[in-house]
Image 1 (cartoon, rainbow, N blue to C red):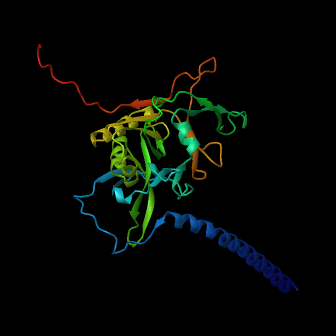
Image 2 (image 1 turned 90 degrees about the vertical axis):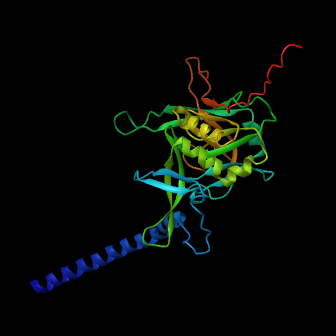
Image 3 (image 1 turned 180 degrees about the vertical axis):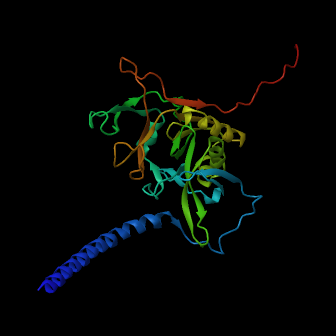
Length: 316
């Protein structure tokens, strides 16, 4: 009797184990497609013999840092993932450097209304702290309030002024891009988030095909960096100096605070990209005691102006 009861209990435990294992397996299998899609979004097509090989002396090389490991990367402009920013007439007016899998893979458009607005203004955003959770229990996340447009924008000096846009995730010390890196011992490559300093970012812009397409018909223009806080330190200034040294006489505008884009389907985006139509953009604002903007958060880096003065020919 005791042997029979023991065998019965053992059989019950085995059935429970099989059921639990089956449930776990179903959970893993159900989550696998999402995980695989995430991996597939980052994997680039296998290297092919028909891919053109560039002579190192003909292709500029850049150095960045793996955002996760801190290891240095060396790469060329052909290894950088970028997208055109276009107006609704189909003209390329800038370049976007997506960083996350969640970022749209479609070209980004700025609507007619959005472009008209951007010529003169930008939205203001205010960061406030929520009351929940109680202080000391958990880290309180900031709550963003998108306020009225604040005029005039620093670049709104002439409605006919040409504007060019460059959009990338950034911090005060540098910019973030995706670089195609080969997976060791395989024929595959993978998009790798990479941080570059301001000087390198300026060189990347000057060598980027989408950026070249945006500026090819413009002798002078203003570049608006749609990036978070690069003007807070030296990143934006150094990127502007790089552009100027490459021969592009563009004045560069960059915010020193958090930047956001206002997409068609959302009120604003600070970290993720929603949709692919931009209606406007803005920056975090600092306010005085009266509730008025303390100052514009935008810094301007002017291109060197050529001296057109002629030499004095002497008395008549």
